[in-house]
Image: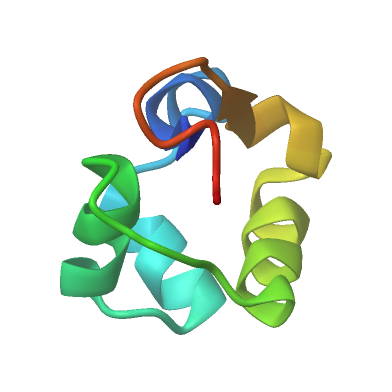
Length: 73
């Protein structure tokens, strides 16, 4: 399973979810879905915008964890 760990990068950059939402152009509701791990997918353009806003690499916020969804069939 891949999860998106925004909280750590937001804290490191001293940025609020509201500010990230405004910089990226994504709704608070969609950011919440990403933060809570309920997202099934993320567009590369959204990932790119988040990385640009947070000055980070995708690997800084995308975390792989073994779990029930890790073996796609």
